[in-house]
Image 1 (cartoon, rainbow over the protein chains, first blue to last red):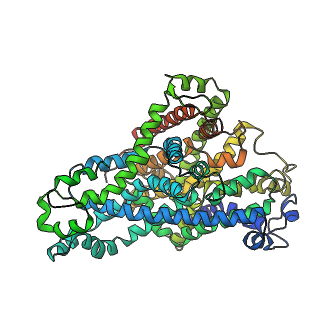
Image 2: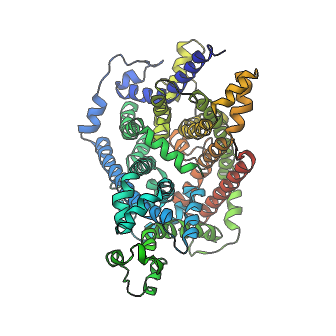
Length: 278
Length: 317
């Protein structure tokens, strides 16, 4: 019986890999074909005449679509980068206080924070749009980043709280006895120890921000702040953009999150598990 | 605002981080300590202003007529809800979403258990396989819609091409937009692709806690691998399965990106979240949008709670 298992398990492993990779392969394949080859029916499973023309067109070409894609790439990097930095800094400070300090109202605040995680994010879609609209923050990076940060702070604080809580108190006490201020203890003693937790939190926040679609769709009506996801969806809706070019844009949009997921998978896995086990 | 109002009560401390830094040493902790409030204030402000207040807004305003085309804002009782239920597109989206949840939670849980069992025991290259397995989770739903539209394409898509190459049929079936249940199942498959990695991870984490001796003892007692799966693996994985089902239920109840990209506004696949978007941001009827959001939120909370009650059992080993 034991001898039979490896074959069964290896076929399972192969199926898992195929399931994850086939749609990605298909988009990459389409993106390096000419439009005529991509439209052949039945499809070419392996491109016979691969070309990088679509990428060249998007990255260096002129015209409406390439310029929108380049601007949207810049937008998404700015929005995700800012949202990640602000979220991680604020969540670290709050998580330290929640995990290590006693103060009145701590539990109430902490549970209120956790309760917001139980609500679907879209509960606040319309009011957030109206708030941002009344503050004149529609079509600004600030508006999008504020909304992202408010959405990601609860999970980020929770993951970091769990991380700080798992570190031994003795380290800090030693620091405090030596006369260091608590912020110095946080900065010099705890942050280096919590680095894996902080990296996990930053990666997860960044990936969540990168995947956003409905919030930026509502909060940005023109190309000045629309991220890549919004622009790609609108290109798809127009039905005039060649499928090869659309797939090249799609591959560009998944390149960053795919690279992060493949390189830092251990941090992401640990962070997700720390964030979901209660 | 609320948390900084504590500041004047402490004599001597003017509230700035610089002055607080000099005083709040280990010995000075007995006095009302400002530092923790300063540390949590930004998060508290964000949560109060951009999560709690908007949530209250949604609840209250769903009972008001709030429409850019029909001002002013006024109390309307259950008007928004009755108008929603008389709207065929909304009712059809409610049914569609029910199917999305059913297909999505079932498939992602089954696949999640399968993937977790495949990854349960260590083998060479396991971390690489896990990295590839979580890949779909990390990608934006919109772009996943683009990736899969290439698979579903009626002429040159992977599915139809395989059908034609293997001589199983003509290979030009319109997969999306024609048959309602097929459309929903295929769109949901794309979302399942995205949410299953997290399900698998959560279930895998529960499986890692099962001691190997349990399987060894079962084997000595003549228990087959199949019955070990039913009697050991599944019962002990329940907490992980419950959390996985809750995350799947939340994601599928709020599905938007995949149907929006793959099927547009067509009634065959439109979800409740899509109707919320159309009603609020195309018809500018915020009142009905609020009401529909409230319905989705309440349903999400009820289903999450029910899943936890039914599936979650604390496992004592």
